[in-house]
Image 1 (tube, helix red, strand yellow):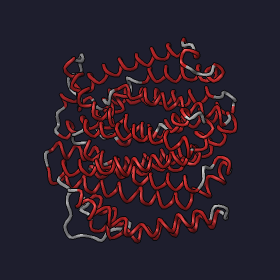
Image 2 (tube, one colour):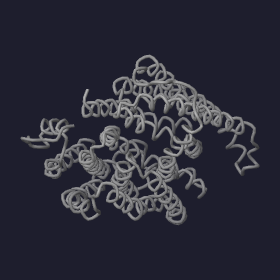
Image 3 (spheres, one colour):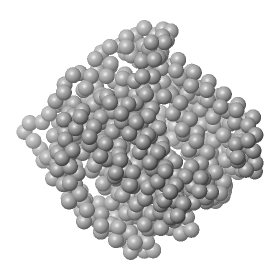
Image 4 (cartoon, helix red, strand yellow):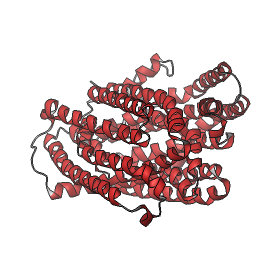
Length: 513
């Protein structure tokens, strides 16, 4: 199976997984809020963000491991793959033990000693302990999931991801409706990764022994090398979490757990759309790493430029949809009392585009190196976003937090990403602006303005009116960006799909995938 076809299959499975998560998530979100209450759910959002920071305890090893294995797989170095697996497994066992130790500490801590209301801590203690313990048990198995990704076992990995999503949905719905409260959310979040990890381990042992030689004891030098390789990715993951998963903590610092729920409801569609924007280009990152491992610099640069165009076009369409749809949807979905307003909704939608483009720049550079400076830049951007969020949010509430996110993306992340693109791929900032970003803005800006205007006017309209407006704008967007798609240097496998979709014209000569 070619890399292009593997990327397409991987994207298809990921879209099925996210479709399930989106549909049921939007159904379950109001049920959870109504059953548990906005205040208690806000408490869970804040504590969940803290657990998310603890997940960075792998120090980036599991984030970078698929890329390292993909590069060695491209070079047919099965011995190196085996060493990576055993060394990463040792790191996973140590980190998993750390989670279990944190779970014990949480169970024993006195809430007064950490400044938490005892009544709030009584609600959170047991769910947090269970979530941390399950995460610790499942942590070593994440190694095998990373190995499958690096070997591009897309069919098994895709089916497994879909089944894990179904299990999460079933546990959430069943336990919440059975009045298990916050405990339901903890079990639904903690059990599926453990099950998926065990299945991944079985797959690696049974089906991929030929790609992995010399399973043995881990070595300190190998573990140290993995930690060094993962440090930049860890910094990047920390920065991304600071940027995207800290609003609850900001509202906690402001003393407004209720606003955390309101902001989460308003941003739900954007949060759900962002992974969808990443699926297609992200599925090509492993292939980019393999091409880079083969040493073909021209094809590496071509692949990176095509992925960047996808990081531009897909979130652009998503932003258009959010601008026109979100004001109507949130009101109809959870009620106007949980909607932060058209201004906040618009800021969130625009930041979805800017942050995805900037993140795409970071990813196409980070997959081939320079992970430490990228990670440091992401951490700085995250700290800037939190500081601005607190400063602006103290006087402007949810609007200030949304403004802080957009300012950080435009002023910090995007410029640095373009600088790193020039350094690694010799694509200057002026070239990226002139050939990619500015042409897109000129074609899409009128449509985005129309979408924002229609979003405010159709907030109380019928579903049919909103749906027709959204479909019309999407059709106009595809027509507007078609010239950008048509002239891009796509590999032949991708080009054939675009030709069938009538987004590009056939070419007499095309690059090989």
